[in-house]
Structures are given as structure tokens and as C-alpha cells.
Amino acid sequence: MKPSIPLSASDLAIAAALVVLDGALSVALGLGLHRQLAVAAGRMVLQLLLIGLVLRAVFALASPPVTLLVVLVMVAVAAREVAARPEQRLTNYGNYTIGASAVAAATLLTSILALTTALRPSPWYDPRYAIPLAGIVLGNVLNAASLALDALLGAVVRERAAIEAQLALGAAIGTSMRGLVRSAVRRGLLPIINQMSAAGVVTLPGIMTGQILAGLDPMEAVKYQILLMFLLAGGSGLGAVAAVLLAARRLTDARHRLRLDRLVSGRG
Amino acid sequence: MTPRLRLKGLRSAIAGPFDLDVAAGECVAVVGPSGSGKSLLLRLIADLDPGEGEAFLDGRPRAGFPAPAWRRRVAYAAAEPGWWAEGVAAHFSDLAAAKALVGELGIASNLLDGTVRRLSTGERQRLALVRTLLAEPDVLLLDEPTAALDSDSVTRTERLLRQWLASGVAIVLVTHDTALASRLGDRKFAMRDRRLAPA
Image (cartoon, rainbow over all chains, first blue to last red; front, top):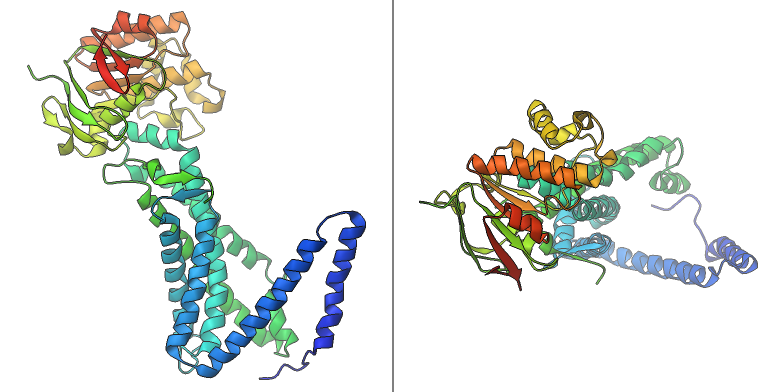
């Protein structure tokens, strides 16, 4: 499929002039951002060109094991992001195992559901569909799971006295943590709710914009966007709930204790 | 006679081992400087920190109780009590009973209708004691119960605790206030290097 208006290198160079303009502004206003800006723009171009080459090769191969491998690498990178964001860390690489399980489960479930029902490419694991879909779901699941995990880990440390006061009065650990678990999941779901509310009114979602620019009929682009939003909402919910419940399990034990000894503060 | 509370080799990674018998109606006072492990002892008895060894209530081993049931009968009141809702009333299982007890401690009962944020440290401490007493525990584990109180409130709190002792409750009291420990404690121990020594 060719886009209706192909882009040439000179087209991109003209757009790059805008980044140069940003750099000039940074120098003129003393923002001290021009170096960072140049590095970020350079990284973006390199990373995207690289992933373009990789995707082209993987699409041409159309080999299920290679597709799976690519998806797993993406999941691993996302899990690392989920694990790294909270200021509090669970011992025994808890953040990593929780990040990986939550992200993998939520992404695979929603992506496979979409590939086997709504999209149905043949075969359903065709990398041209599976990889971009897993990628966009992953990005949102990552965001939801890391926000939710960060919210829960921060809350148990902050609210330790409140949790233990309830335990000391004979409450079950589940009862004592319920409010914090709820608000952590809620925190994880806020971005996708905002995204859905603003879609089409405040923002034209990126996927849809890209498809329209590439020449697709707006109504077809809209249908794809709606499908994706539903997938992202489902994935975010699953990811946030999984991350929070897994973390809550690690932070408690069978004797209804709050195990903050399984948490270390700070980065590293 | 079976002691109300018995500790046998109770220890955590950083405190103990503790061996102690407390009879019904007896108050054991543990004194020691901050950081000596007094609070750790109480948390260990309440099963809030993991550890080894065993604790018994009226001869029944702790392992035989579900943890929440044990904590309802062997109740721990922390030095800095936690609050899990904005309103004061949400922290009390029985508001009518709470109002009666609150009066005995010299607190205006309309404080129960307010918010936790507006309570003074001393009011928080006494209200936390009240919510602990409402469950009618068999053993009270009290961590600095009078630290933030004026002398009148201390007297009222001591009077209330004596009534509970008379009714057969056992108390383990930890404090850095040796005078309080002498007044209320039937026996006194010192916490040294996270172990108990006779005082």
C-alpha cells in the first residue's frame, strides 16, 4: 500500500528546519535546551529509521517465532519502564516481575482478542498487524501499569500508620488496603479516560491523523481509531489491576501483615 | 494459674528473644530510651512484624488464631496512632460506647463529630486508646499512652487503665517515663539492646 503523497528526504529536511528554529529560540532566550533538543531529534530519527528497517525485514520474513521474539523484546522494554518509574522498589526484583507479568498479560490478551476477532488478518499473527498493534497497546498498558504501581507503592509508605492502625484493631489486610488499592487502579485508568473524552474534540488521535494523511477515508480511519481506543481502555484496565493486585500481594502476608520490609526506597 | 499472656522465645530479626508471663489484671511496664526496641516488642506480640517463637493467650498459642482475631484480643495502640478516614467518627465501631469512654478521658464528645485534622496530638492519643478499648481486648499493648497529655489527662487515663486492669485485662506498657512505669506497673523491666532485663 502506497501513501497518496509520498514523502521525500527533502520534505523531511524542510520540516527539520522547525527543529533548528527551536534551537535558535533556545539560544536566543537562554533556555539551554539546544543540545538536548538536537540529541533528542537525532535519536528520534535514528531510532525510527532503525525500527523501520527492522519492521520491513520482519514483515518480509513473516515468521511466527521472529514475530513473537520482537513482541517479547517490546514487552521486556515496557516492563523495565514500569519497574523503573516508582520511587519505591520491591525487593527481589519485584517491580520487574510485576511489571513484566502485568504488561505481558494485558497486552497479549487485548492484542490477540483484536487479531482473532475484529481485525482477522490471515494468518492472525501476521507481523504487519501483530507488531504495530502490540506496540500501541503496550505503550498504553505501560503507562497505566506504571502509574498505578507508583500510586500504590507511594500510598502504602505514606499511609503505613493508617493501615497498621486498622490491622491492630483486628481488620483483615484486604479491608485495610482496600481504599489504597482502589485509588491506585483509578490513577492508572485516568489517562485513557481523558484520552477517550478528548478524542476528536480536543485532539485528533495520532493514529487517525496518520491514516488520514496517508490517504485513508476519514470514516475508515475513525473506525480504526475507535477500535484502538477500546483496546487501549481494556489493556489499561487489565494492566493497572494486575500491577496493583500483584504488588499488594507482595506487600502483605498470610498473617495479615503489611510487609514494608519488602520495599526499598530510592532509585537503583 | 495460666498467665493471660505468655511470650516464649518470641523474636524477630532485630529484637528479642523475649520470654515473659503477664497475669490477668497485671501491668508489666517496660522502660528504655527511644530506639531501644520497646515498640518492636509490642509489634512482635501483636504479630505486626514477622518473627519466630510463640505467644499464648490464656494458654492458647497465637498460631491457632487467625491474625485479625488475635489482634482483636491482644490489642496494640501505637505511640503515633494512624487514621484512615477524614471524619473522627469513622474510626469507632460503636459511637455510643465511644462517647461514654471519651467523657471519662476528659474529651468533649462533640470532637467525635469533627475531622481528624483538627484534633490535637493529645486528643488523638486518647481517642486512639478509646477505639482500642471498644473491642474489649484481653491484653492491651500500650506504646507511650500518655506522652502527649497534660497532667490532668494523665491522671484520667491512669484511672481508666486501672479499671480495665481490675476487670482482668493484662497490660504491657512501654514508656520512657519511669514515673508512669512505677505508678502503673506491677513489675518493671528495662529494654537493653533489644532484650528485656529486670529493672
